[in-house]
Length: 261
Image 1: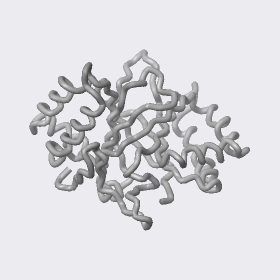
Image 2 (image 1 turned 90 degrees about the vertical axis):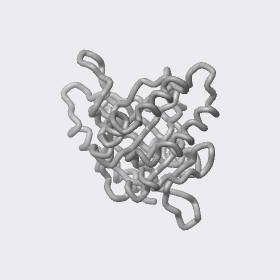
Image 3 (image 1 turned 135 degrees about the horizontal axis):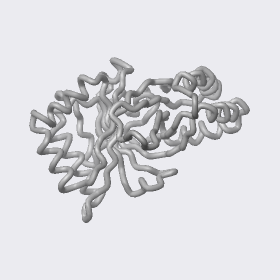
Image 4 (image 1 turned 45 degrees about the horizontal axis):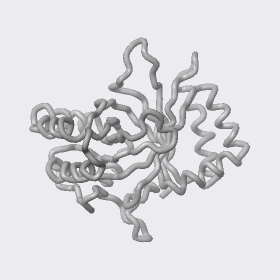
């Protein structure tokens, strides 16, 4: 990302965000100076159902959230470059909800106390078999100007675990130095570190790189940097010395609901 990355502290809270009226560093309802919440609704389509069927629920959900004053953002992710192989069970879509952690608690209480909220949950199960996962996110960098220029999103996920003897403090320092050493060479719009919390299962003790791009051209520019621009050495150093990772899979993301703030 060309000359826009601002390193805010050694722990990697880095962002080019938007300053709210109260002085907090926020973007679409997320205070970037704090860890924020992410809810992954990991879904497989029911037999005979399609994403068009899932989308029929969206107007009801938008209206319910608006009536309840829920201030979260919702994106629907569909796989592009997937880890799935023929014959394996697949994830057909993920509904990704993002916002301040306190707002998640308030939103769930309002939603489940509402007859319409409970009805939406029941009706949605007719289209998708979903598992809910809650995680905490740390923003490492964000180019708010680029993100605000379009709602197009390509998002990559890469699950990693620290190598033996590597502490999370060392990982944080490495992530901060990655921005210093390589930030100007990458066309990344946002980078978050995600740590699983509720419903973690086998992901407990691991973390995920969640990276956002505003176009496939930007993602492929990053691939070209790795292939031909010197990025391979930086990636190899990370994978050989710091973390064991599953490798990226790539999702097309569409905003269903945007935070009002």
